[in-house]
Amino acid sequence: MGLFDDMKGLGHEQVAFCSDPAAGLRAIIAIHDTTLGPSLGGVRMWSYPSDADALADVLRLSRGMSYKAAVAGLNLGGGKAVILSDGKTEKTEALFRAFGRFVESLGGRYITAEDVGTSVQDMEWVSAETNHVTGLSKVRGGGGDPSPITAYGVYKGIKACAKERLGSKDLEGVRVAIQGLGKVGYYLARHLVEEKAVVVACDIDRDKARRAGTDLRIEVAPPDEIFDVDCDVFAPCALGGALSEETIPRLRCKIVAGGANNQLKTETDGLALERRGILYAPDFVINAGGLINVYCEIDGYNQERALRMADQICPNLLKIFDIARRETIPTYRAAEILAERRIESVRGLRRVV
Image 1 (cartoon, one colour):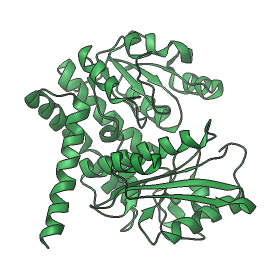
Image 2 (tube, helix red, strand yellow; image 1 turned 135 degrees about the vertical axis):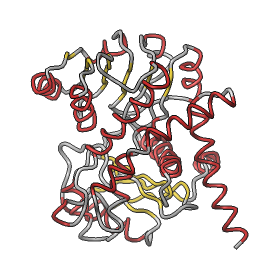
Image 3 (cartoon, helix red, strand yellow; image 1 turned 90 degrees about the horizontal axis):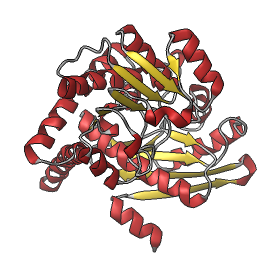
Image 4 (tube, rainbow, N blue to C red; image 1 turned 180 degrees about the vertical axis):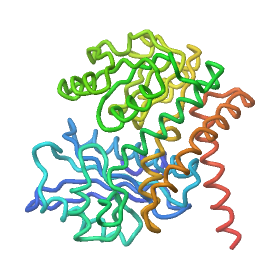
C-alpha cells in the first residue's frame, strides 16, 4: 500500500515497472497527469542506490513535468522514466529497443525523450520500436539535443530574476555561480559570458570543468565549494536535491535560478530560501526550454518556433513573482498554483462536456 499512497499523494495516474532480463533492462515509467494531453518526459539512465530511490525520483520528476507543461502553456501531461543502469557503461541497442517496446505498450499515454544519461542516439534505438519518442536527430526531422534550448530558457529566466531582484535585465558584471557544466550548464555559461556576466562554475567531472574553463575563460571552483561562492545568482545545473538544509545556509547569493530538476530537496527548503530573502526561480518553470523543444517536434520541428516559445519563460516568471507578492507566498508555491489552475480549468471543461 505504500506505493499507492505515494501515487495518491502526488496525484499519479499510472506507474509501470519494466523488466527484460535478456536485454538487461530494469526501468520505471511514471505517468502523473494527462488532463492537458499525453504525458511527455525524458528517460533518465542512472545507477540509483536502491530501487526505492529510483521510484522516488521518477515520481517527483513526472509530477514536475505536469507542472512544467502546464505553466509553459503546452498541451501535454507529465511523465518520466528511469532506467536503472549506468549510462556510461551499460548502454546497448537491445536495452533501448526493449524500453521502446514498453513505451509502445502504453498506447501513446507516455512519450519519451532524452534526459540525464541518455542521448539522441539512444532515442534513435527507441524509435525502432515506437513512434512515441521525441528528441530525435535533425536528420530524422527532430530537434536534436534539447540542451541548448533548455540553457537558452534558463538564461532568459535569469534575466527575469535580475529585473525582479537587481532592478535590471542587464547581466553585465552580474556574478553567477553555476553548479554543473554538463550540456545545459555549459551552454548557459556561454550565454552569460557573451553578455559579459562574471561566471564561476564547477563540475564533478574534472575534464568538463577544465574544458569549460579553457573554452569560455571562466573561473572554475572545486565542486564542494560552489555553495560558498559570493555571487548574485546561484544556478544549480546538476542533479536534483541540491538545495537542502545543509546547503542553503551556505549560499551567498540574492537569486537561485538554474536548469536542474527538483532543486529543492523538500518543500521546507523552499521556505528556507524565502526566509533568507533569496529569490527562487521555480525549476519547472525556468528549465522548460527542453520540454518546449521536444514538444515542437510533435507537429514538425521548427527551431525558430521553439526559441520563440522559450522566450515566454521570462514573462511567466515575472507573473509568478507577482502572484507570490500579492498572495504573500513563496515563489515555488505560486508556480504550483499557476499550473494547478490551468490543469483544473481544463479538467472542469472536460466534466462539462
